[in-house]
Image (cartoon, rainbow, N blue to C red; front, side):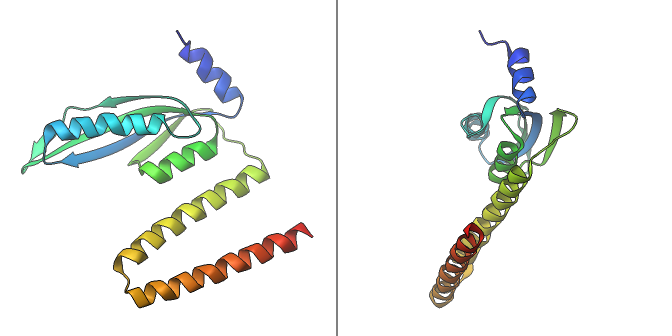
Length: 161
């Protein structure tokens, strides 16, 4: 059996983060809600950078024909970037970092974090735009994205010189 405390200490000593993420889920069907909550925790556990995770699901409450529950997931990630990616994907209500008391990152990791956030927001904006835009607008956006990609490549080539 795995010694969770030793695993946690070792992971944190290597840059890991122990946190609690809080979520809310809603459904008209209580049984489906409980199944969704269980699969939700399982999905977090399967994310890159997650060392271990444990979730507690509150008993669903009914109000006006809608069931709601909250989930508390204690997550040990290998680094801060992994925690940020999980937050970007799963959108918790709030996050509480338990350990370490201080997060230190190198400049390379800071760049990686910023690019991860920028990429996630770009994907969200693209999804929304595709859902509400006309075909003509989407074609215009695709051309814009192609130009943006070319400029990005030029910047990378220039930086590599």
